[in-house]
Image (cartoon, rainbow, N blue to C red; front, side):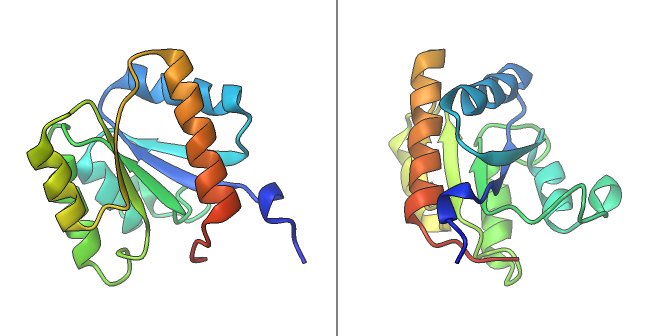
Length: 150
């Protein structure tokens, strides 16, 4: 039997803010959570990645994520639209989506849950908060939750 804690999970982050992506990568390293992080810049890229289209056609470079971290406010296709498409697709809807956004609007939170997100989290204001969040997410999604395999 394999030790569940030793297995990395594939996390796909969709966020148009390069600083947020880099900070999240650093926070994951700092939190010592064992996982693989892949990043896309908007909802269009997110769906291309998930559907293995274009530059994401090779599964080795774009493995199916165990978890999606989704920003709401992105260009081309925002997180709300992308979430709606993910949850409408029978091949993708089993992937848990955690909304990680700066939006504190109750309407965004309610809509996110209505569309099928697993959690709605407001981005921490500092790096230490982000490290703690990544540590908590890592513990929860890696140690406690049973995730479907590809």
